[in-house]
Amino acid sequence: MTVLVTGAAGFIGYHVAAALLARGEAVVGIDDLNPYYDVRLKQARLARLAHPAFRFHPVDIADPSALAAIARQTPEIDRIVHLAAQAGVRYSLQAPFAYARSNLLGHLAVLEMARGLGHLRHLVYASSSSVYGGNQTLPWHEQDRVDQPLSLYAATKRADELISHAYTHLFQLPQTGLRFFTVYGPWGRPDMAYFSFAEAILDGRPITVYDAGKPRRDFTYIDDIVAGVLGALDKPPTGAQPRLLNIGNHRAESVSTLISLLEHALGRPARLVSAPLPPADVPETYAAIDAIADLTGFAPTTSLADGIPRFADWLLAWRARRDDGKKQG
Image 1 (tube, rainbow, N blue to C red):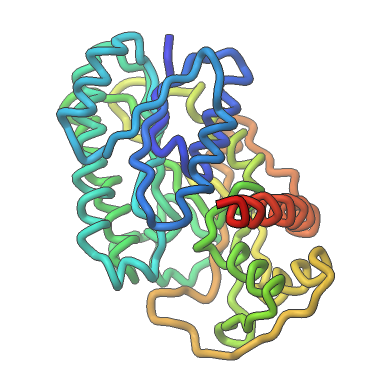
Image 2 (image 1 turned 90 degrees about the vertical axis):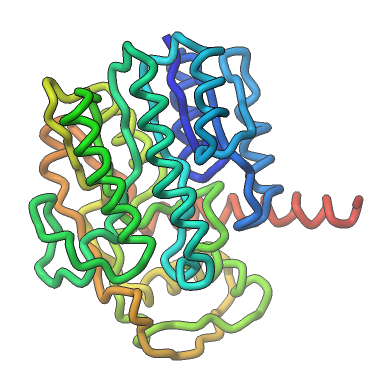
């Protein structure tokens, strides 16, 4: 049978698709390759997925007819890992309709596609730790309140959870929503802080640091995340009970620690500019992971001190390749 991965050219989607192929699965990938960040990075990820068992469709998940056509062409799809979305908390202040289209209409279109498959074993979809809003009780548990989002992005992700709940109740779709915390690592997203900080350090540009670097994040390395996603995919819920799981490192580290590790890994000092914490940001994120650990044995093993040097090595190689491509072009 076959696994459909939406957002296959994205950071997490690429790594999940690669892991599925490595364990012998057939994979259908979907991505619209939008220019939210450098499309060359998305194309380079896709190039690494070249495999006889991988088929790719450059379509928008908010296009129900395109998804229906893929379902007709690939009736053997029996599992879905839905990772495509318009990401980014701050960008939702600039392009709100992009979030409504991708995160709401797109999620609904994927659910309708799943409903039409008829033999779906499991749909795993990406939610976000952002749904916890300004919750100050740490660590964050799946049972905590999630009705006070601090950003449109967070609101769309909570809406996805509620829509999925309704579809599970109405149509018995077996679903698991994963509340991702801050994911980092090689082939990451340039809009995320660790990536943009590293680029700024290498370019000699200043870094804007909020609240003197005091905010803390549950940084989770991509290999640990992939293990959790596949573990959850392999454990579909029984009956018509929707499921939500945190997926994080269960360890909060300060932004100032992140910057220090980047400076050491890149061999250059950072230029820092202080600013107050934006209203869409929270002081700390911290995942309780008991539920996913009990279900799948999920146990992150990569510390920030180990993961950042791996990312830095990749970034240096990627920049050399990217810059060489610019010269040739």
